[in-house]
Length: 196
Image 1 (cartoon, rainbow, N blue to C red):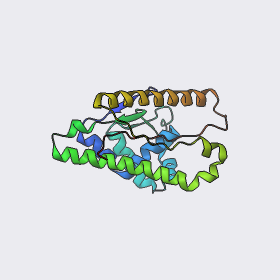
Image 2: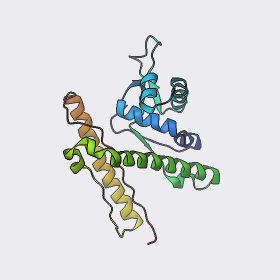
Image 3: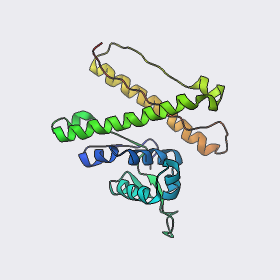
């Protein structure tokens, strides 16, 4: 997988994969673990090994994850990794078909529910992380007056900033894997028009 590589989802079958909460949790667990066995992933998502194994095979069949060849040689313990760093899709690509649009909406809702659950967990547990992490965390909301092209430009700039920091973290983790202060950080922002 190339650092920063993102998969553009363009069909309903791919989107359906994201509407299943466990598959999404497994995808995010692999994001954090980078490579893991089904048994380790079952521990991380607190589900049965047989259920996790089934959903890993489904994710692999749709090209979201793959076996790690160097670790899966003996076939007794299969190791998995993502095929892309992330994924994206545009709702407009599914607007012409009401059923496809429904799946796109369900996928967006599932992604948002996952993000909110992680934020709620942070709110409940932030004290356990200590003052340094609590003070470094971010909660921000801005009301902007933009045109659609300006919003597209803002989105591209923010994506580039996030990719820059993701690469910095990846390189830092490779250069100093034992550095104690490096943690996974979830950042999500939404920017969209609305009527006040």
